[in-house]
Length: 452
Ligand code: 5AD
Ligand code: SF4
Image (cartoon, rainbow, N blue to C red; front, side, top):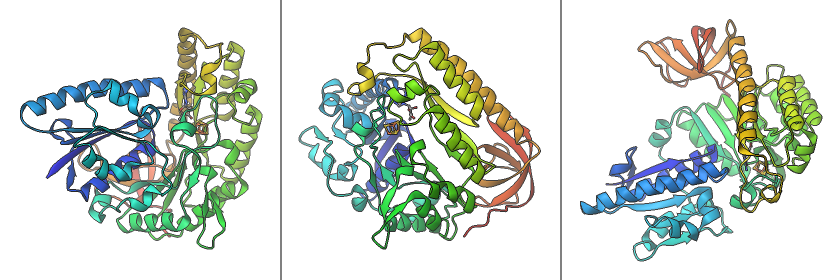
């Protein structure tokens, strides 16, 4: 049997795509390996969001080239595929810079992989066209055993692409316009996942709360309506969605946080900056206060809500005072967890053309200050759960015998002293201690979250 090694960079969309590629290649006779050295087929599923992410791919391709040579010396062939957003953005350039690469395939084209691999016997190939047909219609569903082996929490792509055109972001160029999958197809996939033991679905999309898919009745469904339908799927006890844009948090979605116990009280809602001027130049289409008011409304609907966000420091032209506005917004809102980045100019995006780029040391200092504050908030949030009883979805055996590991509603890793329970069960746990990256707790009873 031939072996495939897939390495994914970047966001959850890539994790999901990597799984779909592996599923498809399984039907072509490939088994998955975690060791690149023994792979007949190496796939790098790449990310283009920041410069560092893209450069990582080229350095990895250097290593792959060495490997390919070594295997060749012992008479083994290795095919090398670059997939994902770097593939989409750079296309042919990858073939020029990385001689080891046989196939370059964009995120909308990987259903063509078997044909492309075939073609690559005689020539190096690039497929980055935006196709008219839906790749999901051409991808085989994985076997129940494969799904089971991936655990009780699964990603489900419901939307791809983005029409927001934030001025720093490559996504609208690499992933294209917003497209929502029809409700019936999402439902089929959710039923299949639930049937294989999945208890938690994370609905994913570059701009997931802009979801506007065709419902079974032909009308357009919003994310709020879709959540209601998915909450009825037998076995599914938890629903999450990511990543969202503040402008697309509509009333129906906010109400879903109030009305559906399955919708977890945890929301990743990137704000990027606290300065109104920077938000405007970023083309985010909202102010700092509008974000604060939105959070108040969501918290009213779901008082237990915990938040997470993305931040960019050192956006072109950002002054010290404007950076302080970001610090103030963080202090005002309070985040349970966050991602923060130095601005990275991406070729082809409007912000990269702005003259007033912020010097690297200034970016570094701002990032350190922001990350310090965010870390204090994260630790405070985690410590705040000590003494509380939380529902925990058990995901796997724990670090030590007699322990199990799971996730709280707030995506915190929790270690529990128990061996009486099965993976996939939701149990109520009293949190006894907060470490720097996980919580510790004791079982107090069955979970309050009952599956539909
Ligand atoms: N520079 C730095 N960070 C960026 N992000 C997107 N584009 C850039 C860029 N050019 C960050 C944003 C986004 C997250 C996925 O990546 O914060 O929400
Ligand atoms: Fe990029 Fe998100 Fe803005 Fe879309 S909404 S352009 S994906 S940062």
